[in-house]
Image 1 (cartoon, rainbow, N blue to C red):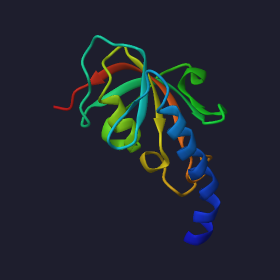
Image 2: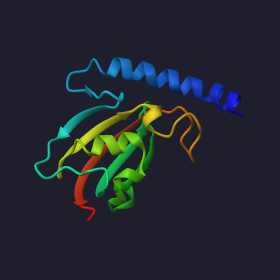
Image 3: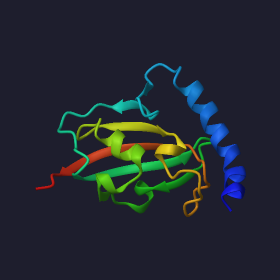
Length: 140
């Protein structure tokens, strides 16, 4: 089973690695030690969350071809979640943001959903998220 999934996700992984290699050359794109890439669309001026906080965000998720797979704007309301309860790319990236900021994250599969299919997201997929940090609820 693992071998079949690895073969299935190889095309996605290769495409994502190629995308990230080119993307990091663009002006304004920052690459962290983990491999997360991001760019600042709008700078914030509030506090930054810690991994243990709960955040409220609006977001738009796409694949590298631009096809959307999830979008809180379409649902008409932001989402709140414990920051340490989501994919690693979000946990890391949102801690770089301040309230009011909008960033675009380029998340390698290792910081996303990994090599295995997750719901409608094919294994090995590199994901792009535009995320707006609206609020932070500190963990007491």
